[in-house]
Image (cartoon, rainbow, N blue to C red; front, top):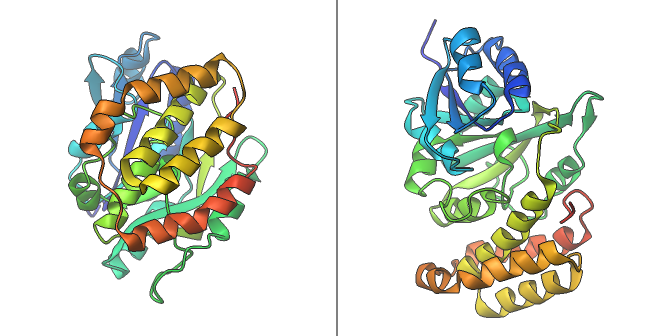
Length: 298
């Protein structure tokens, strides 16, 4: 077998049954990708499951929960030129990884390819797919699909060197919309992101999730990204819009409080995006406001 060009990284915590299902799908792929599981200090027997049932998978046993940063650890453990992410409740369709690798091979300025997302067990498209197809961002003529301003990690194959050069996922964001900051930094480095409708990733949402914590982090991380990268006027308008539209409850108050408490480091690390990249994000503002696919709920 030739050396695989795409490796898969899974960050997991306390979801052994869904992780086992995901691994069975991935290990059955014709591409035979190397798989790295970064275990965020699970306490449900995940590591025993991996040792007994999946000895061919490389396991990073992290000493504590590193959230999305575990994916960065996983990328460091791979030597493939491209890396795909799966969640522990998602997997790639046969041929999708090789199809993404082909696009990345053919287009040297392409940094990431995002696939169509099918939600299981019903086999329906995730509502976000329509927004990916209809992205308003103009791209160069060579781009093989719609240009994107961000990506969804569990449905994306990235150029590993570009991921590492951009610093991977920011350690402060932990989890929840963490892709937005990385996507902007990839764009600053000159990489384009695209959507590929002919490639498919499957998602069977796990019932083991803390929706309230996810909402807290989602609001907080949106604010942090806005303050870290957007011009002052845009950042203020985005902050005011969120304050008006998020649910008026304790979770939202906590999210804003966590975001505000971090202002010292945010201001130290603030780097406003170049005008070209900022102009792409402005084109996404209206579609984001109208979106029904991603809401701060829970």
